[in-house]
Length: 333
Length: 268
Image (cartoon, rainbow over all chains, first blue to last red; front, side, top):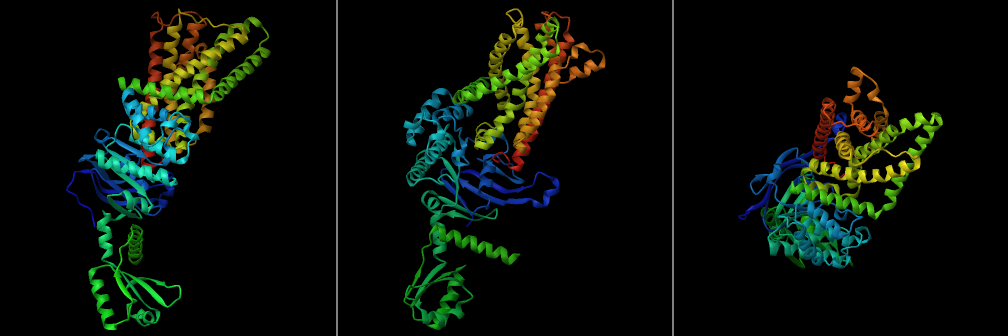
């Protein structure tokens, strides 16, 4: 499922790896391999979502892209130029730890002016962009209030506004809607979509909120234990896993008769409230698996109530991929 | 150059705004320095009974104290910025927004020097009014004093950069800074101009001592250091500060790289 694209890549990761060593040399055996050889191309003008459980390497990857962490191996290439050269780096904006990216004692407007000047913008440009951004995120009325007195959602919106100053080509967002109320979360999602569709920006967001990724992302990458284990567009992922998930509904007595015969396949089992019926979802690895299962079921001739192909949610896909990967790693070990 | 001036303006505005949001911090800091000086002054007065001797040495005493005030600021403020910004979580945003961090630290040092200078003026007026001893600072020697002050303090900012670099890697290094402040207190008060030979050269090669000595020459002796009679001392002061500033910059760059390798910028 490795992604390829005809569009020009905003950046690509080439064999990116990162091992964190403890500061004391005699503790080197406690080294942590956070990222293990990631190859990835992210096309220009899309929202790319990196999904993964806690400790999968999402934040480390995004910080390497931002230049805040140096990789142990591999490199980040922006528009065909090595990102380790400071002059080669495009304009990047980032919200890495949510609302903690701001001076809390300063107002949103003062934060915008400070970071605008740090980015080398003129005062006129900052004034114009600050007005636009404050309006875009419904912050105009709170522009001069102390940031620490704002709600978490508002602080997060200020952080995104600061990251957008200077119109960065690439925006990096680490868990951008974590802990936000529905309204703030929706507004941020809407604005992100507009930035991609209207201005052609590229946005990388890490999250473990499947709903967010499913709603806004054009492409999805799944990280597990520092490895990129899947990468594609959401429709492709759904289509791929739709072919692999089949749901059978049948009487419990039939299932008891069939159970041992299908034990070689991976499945999940769910009983009805009256315990009379059972719903079985088979997770097949390949088309061959489907043929084998069909053959088996035809030979046993069970009495089905229904049989259908399941359209998986992103959460189903995520769980299936990560569990399959964990199982494979377990077998290898 | 224009970029540096813009950064300077941004840092100055930020620094002033933050100070004004919590003026009590500023006031307490100045008040403690004033009380500490008065404690030292009254202690010295109880030891030196002869008013003439006390009056003769008071000029130097005040100058050394004011220089130590600059030392406290130069040694600790850059590291303090980094510690508090790491705690707030804004440090990574700064590094991402302006990746040439050493240049930013230099600009912050300049802003810090100016704010310290303003505070010193207030402190100095309070001290001089309390002791009744008014230093001979006027239009005739103010430029010389400022030149010597800037060059001397620039060397101390080299140590400030070392502490800022260590703060990037280890985050909490406040105790080390406090110990160093006492070492510099000794250097500020050590009468290096009264010794001779190689020992004098050795002391003058340390930070602060030569600068304090030259400022005393201008203020206490009311003489000039730009009349060509002390070219080697002036050159020595410039080289001394440049060396410490360069060492500080190199250590800061090494620590910055180490911090990026270890992924410690965002940690606290």
